[in-house]
Amino acid sequence: MIAFQLLGIALLLLAVVVTVAAARRGHLSRGAATAWTALWLAAAVAIAVPNSTMVVAHALGIQRGADLVFYCAILAMFAGFFVVFVRLRRIEQDLTRIVRHVAIRDAVEPGSERQDEGAPPPGR
Image 1 (cartoon, rainbow, N blue to C red):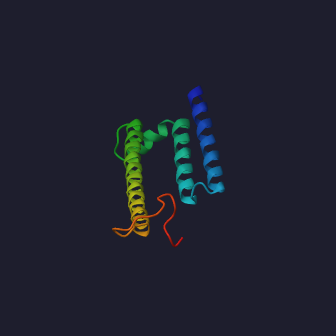
Image 2: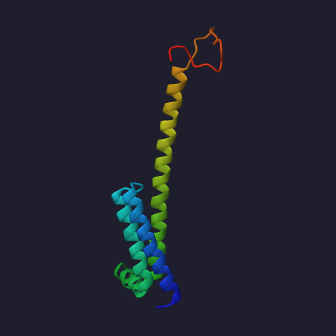
């Protein structure tokens, strides 16, 4: 085994430990932790046995294992970007609802003025 393989596998095993610890603390759901752990272990296998990607690639009709890794990375990035986009849209919609609710709750009737702008509106 070459130095890169040893270092890469060590870092990926550390990533597995950190992922499991994050899941136990409740920072990751069980499904997310399982997915990340599977990814780390697949990367470790690909580093430890480089020809394994070529075998899988050939089974899928791809010429080189490196191409398979590249295609999977591109698909994963697209999926990740989509998930982030959907979450951001949902956060924007939630924020809009909250701002509208606060604006309606704190609205002042036309023609009336608050006595003290820093004080909360009456009724609280």
